[in-house]
Structure formats: C-alpha cells, structure tokens
Image 1 (cartoon, helix red, strand yellow):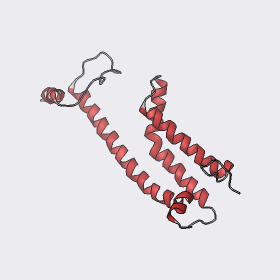
Image 2 (cartoon, rainbow, N blue to C red; image 1 turned 120 degrees about the vertical axis):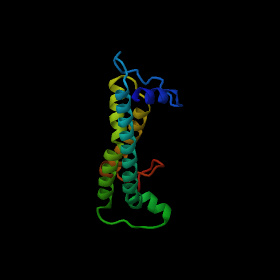
Image 3 (cartoon, rainbow, N blue to C red; image 1 turned 45 degrees about the vertical axis):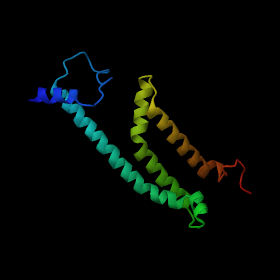
Image 4 (cartoon, one colour; image 1 turned 90 degrees about the horizontal axis):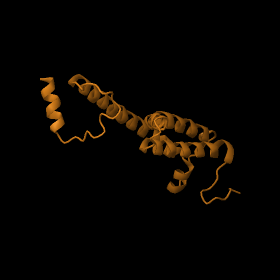
Length: 148
C-alpha cells in the first residue's frame, strides 16, 4: 500500500528534479518519502505562523515609523518611541527573518548562495541601516542631507 502511494505520487505533477541530490545512495523507501513530506508540511506551517505573527508586529512598526507618520500627516511621536520601534524591529528581524538567515547560513556553508542568501542579505542591510539611524547616524533623510 505504501509503495503504491509513493508510485502514485511520483506520477503526479510535482517536480522532483534535484530531490535526491544530497541523499546518500540508499534505497528511497516510502517511509523516508513520507517523512520528507511531513517535514515539508511542518516547514510550510512554520512559514505561515511566522508570516502572520510578523504581520501583526509590522502594524505597530508602521504606525511608529516617522516616515509613515509624515506621509499620513500625523504626529504620534513620544519620548522613547525610536527605542520601542527599534525593539519591535529587532523582534521582527530575528523572528520573521530566522528561516532566511538560517537558510543563507546553510547555502553559504555549502558554497551555493541562492535566494535565501539574497533575502537574508537584504533584510540584514535594512535592519543594520535602520538601527544605525537610531543610535549613530541620526535621522538622515533619504535625499542624503542631514537634518538641520
């Protein structure tokens, strides 16, 4: 029965090219394949959970962002808001970025940088620049001029 499910799955529309690249030259039994799909389903659920929690954290980050407030024509600034914004952004970077950061680490360890490396690099540069503007650079306007 298990073998039949595995054979039916292989005839389906899923692309399995490269599926066995990193596996040892062993028999690929149905149990291994189902374990792979369980792991994949867990990864998908983890990405969904991280996405929705990150989305929730993003709302106060956007509300506290001075540039968004400027676009909306409001001023909800208060003492220490930049530190709260940095704290929320740090949580968002670490929690939401973890799959990309660990994926990039694995890609670079294998000397095969790909999409995870690109995303990790992008979110890291954005996070570091934003953090530097709070603690070192000050509120540098994107035009490149310092505020007066």
